[in-house]
Amino acid sequence: MTGFRSNEEFFQAVRDLIATLEAGGHPQAAATLRDGFGCLNGLTDGWALFLQSIENVQATESKRFSPGHQKALEAIRAAAHAAVYRR
Image 1 (cartoon, rainbow, N blue to C red):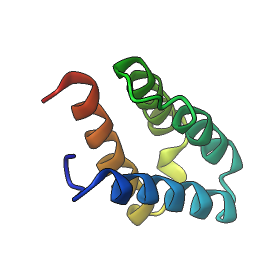
Image 2: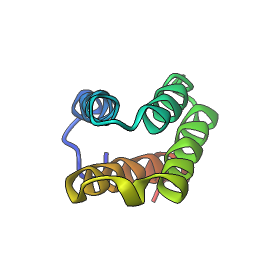
Image 3: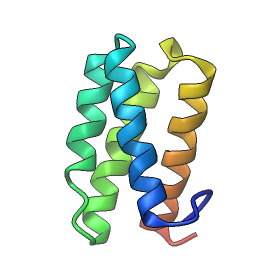
C-alpha cells in the first residue's frame, strides 16, 4: 500500500484522521470520510467509493485543514487511488 507498511497501518491512519478532524471542528469532513470508509468491502468498488469521498472532502473542505491534516488526507488519497487503479 502506497506510503503505508500494511493495511492495518492505513486503516489506523484513516481512523485517526477522522477522529482528529471531528475533534478539530470539521464534522462534515469527518462524516464524509467515515461514510466512504464504511464502503470498503475488499472489492474495487468499495475502494472507489472511498476514493470519491476523499476527493469530495479535498474539493470542498480541505483548504480549512491544517497542513498536517492536508498531508495525511493526501497520503490516504494516494493509497486509495493505488488500490482502485493498481498503480
